Image 1 (tube, rainbow, N blue to C red):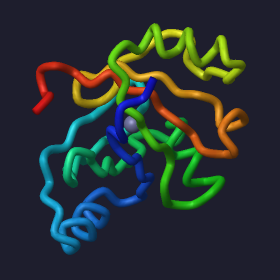
Image 2 (cartoon, rainbow, N blue to C red; image 1 turned 120 degrees about the horizontal axis):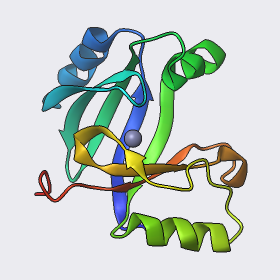
Image 3 (cartoon, rainbow, N blue to C red; image 1 turned 45 degrees about the vertical axis):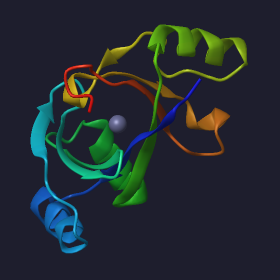
Length: 137
Ligand code: ZN
């Protein structure tokens, strides 16, 4: 079902500080995008064929703001790339995995995304991600 890690989503309170840290490790900032559906600003830092995505809430009722409130800054989700997102969701559900999103929704980078429930995955919030052909290498 999954092909590789698309990206790792990391919740930060201060986007500039997060970017500066990963740049100090040698990663390059590819871009910043606002994702209204998630109420976050996302900074992309490619690393090999995956990316670090820094997620900074733009509103107090953003899921990422709630995450930071509960758990502090840190890894918020891991995203796996899939070829066919609706098919992957059907397959996951047929295996008894609890879905947060039964339907794909728009994510950053023109991708379609859907989250699986951490209850099914030992506490890890997993995103399935159909990356856009527009940005595929
Ligand atoms: Zn993501």
